View (cartoon, rainbow, N blue to C red):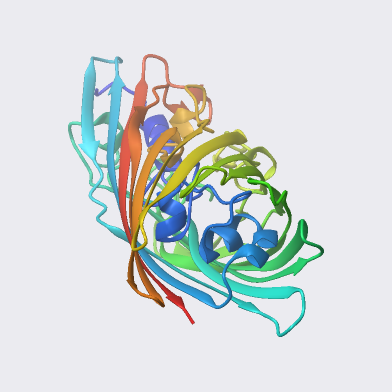
Amino acid sequence: MKNLDYRSLTFTSVAIALFAGGAVAQQGHVLNGVGAVNQGMAGVATGLPNDASGAIQWNPATVSAIDCCDMQFSMELFQSDLEMYSAVTVPGPMSGSTDSDLGLAAIPSFAMVHELGDSDWTFGLGAFGVAGFGVDFAADASNPILMPPPNGFGQIFSDYQMLQVLPTFSKQVDEHWSFGFAPTINQARLSVHPAPFASPDDANGDLTPSYPSASAGADAWGFGGQIGVFYDSLDDWTFGASYKTTQNFETFEFNAVDEVGMPRMLKFDMDFPAITSLGIGYTGIDRWKMGLDIRHIDYANTDGFSESGFDMTGAAKGFGWDSISVVALAAQYEASPNLTLRGGLSFNDSPIDAGNVGMNLPAPAIIEQHLALGATYKITEHMLLDVAWHHGFENDVAGEMQMPTGPVAGSTVQPTMSTDSLIFGLRLAL
């Protein structure tokens, strides 16, 4: 590969570091559910009130239909099986595959609901890990895009975590209708090596510009809101709709250094996309609950996701993701007074395709099909144990490497990913 334009390859390799998939991504970088019950239902909750976590996360109006004083704690252990393949044909064929070394990710959640006296209002509070990504690819001399510098990039590391807190209010208008709203308070942390959103520098004068590292990380706060409506026909059918606004984050600011150790301040704007949800529930069969949710996640109009490619300085402008649709189906069966079983399937588009996969290596967004299974065991009249397992079926997307001057002819990059989660939860009926 001596005659390959390694400077361009290095630009390309580094530029994809942030826009890499990772540890807690499901539908894009958004988790498909929160807590053991909602994850066991594949995220179905908008029109089928079933637990406090799902109600607060997907439709605040359904909080009125949750049993009073329900409190939940859950912990999700998430593991991704992630591999990156790359190949070039010029000056000679070379290819290789590398696995990410990232381990288990722990994702906590908490939720509770409480009726406000004798009024028609119900209060809920949720605190959920709702989004994230992260990879850790070691330098690999047999993989073109991970070859040690200056021939390739070397290590790619990224870690993004987002916590969302939702103080939720729901009012029962009459026996059929309720509405709800919630301000949303978010905190996120981002670390990435290197930082493709910054302009590369050549401070050491070796004529090989490089991107700085943002591995020290940066924190940012974000705010938004959510509204919802819920209709109970009182005749087996329920319906819901909700809208969660874009979560507008302050700019991530990173303390970094250039090639000779002089200080640099790096900045990156990345918000959380607006989500629209519609749902239907059916309870007309004895001991069964069934539901359908349809969602739209608006990546295409969200800062950090909407733009793609590079600016004139060589900095990557964003993920370049498309908005996606999600369809989730689930059912729950009361097998006995002490045991409830549940399961579901969800399907979504990938915001990444062959045209932009070169800017999203490796990408969490390539998972498109999900299976969920779960159960609840009643330990006492006031304590329930919830468990769930979630699997994201393996998928891959292949495209060309990208650089500021365009795609690299004869090149291929192909992430392959599957995911598994095990969720444990405890519910207390106070």
